[in-house]
Length: 344
Image 1: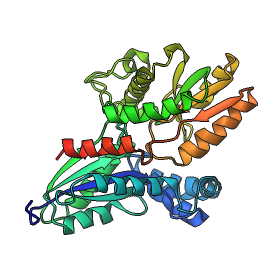
Image 2 (image 1 turned 180 degrees about the vertical axis):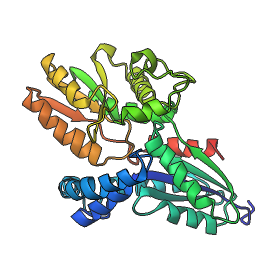
Image 3 (image 1 turned 45 degrees about the vertical axis):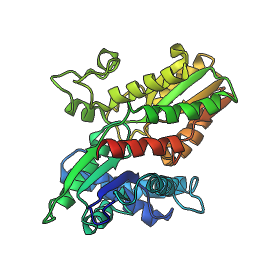
Image 4 (image 1 turned 90 degrees about the horizontal axis):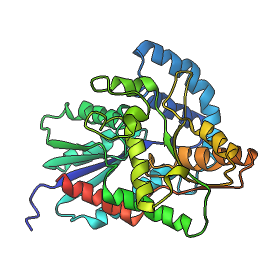
């Protein structure tokens, strides 16, 4: 092996997290996150007024309290699980061929820091893997935006490849199936709920090809070249593929969307509504998956695992079990390794 041969750089990018549970750090995180024009897709001046004068000041104290519910001695689970994923990936890749870095789209460590390390290493190519299984402009698209904003200032720009979607990757699906099987071996359930992070309907419609989007089963029940980058369609596809691997009864499976912000309509059905419907139908034991997240975070541990559990129990439910995220599970690490090698 020629040790002087240029390596391929790999940059793993997750969403981000506050540096601490202090209100000031949470406010700082929210401002950076929500000022992204792909996250809140309205003109810059109204967005600044909304974020800086309304959302961040009033939401930060509440969010800071929520973060205390999941913070550990290692800090934010989303951050340290991504660190663990990177370290395991490094062990599986040839160090003579690859240099792996990680970053957060918002806050630390930044994309700029990760790219700078790869740039200084004079890598011949950079593979950017956005750790969001389903493509969305507000997540994967934002990562592409940021990477190119930084790389365009370089004198020499190596080849840059983006991995923006991996919902159909066999190892991604198998990792979720393994976790599901572990839960099913311990308990039987009346229903299976798949909860994904929501998006405003307008963002889905903006990406509609030839007016194909109907935000319903008319389009999302099939995965085609016209809706291959539709977030809602990809979520329903993810559910179908995991359900198929686990052999779950399809009449007991529901797909829904959580984490609404603001008054505009978001993609439906809403998770809160589906919880009410399941309880009304007499479901007592529900197994919950959150396959839009590859690392446990506020939206999984607290929102789905605690808040929705309380809602379900208040409606007469007896058991609400959340399947943990992929985190640094070996099969998931193998999936990321394969994504790297496929794009080398």
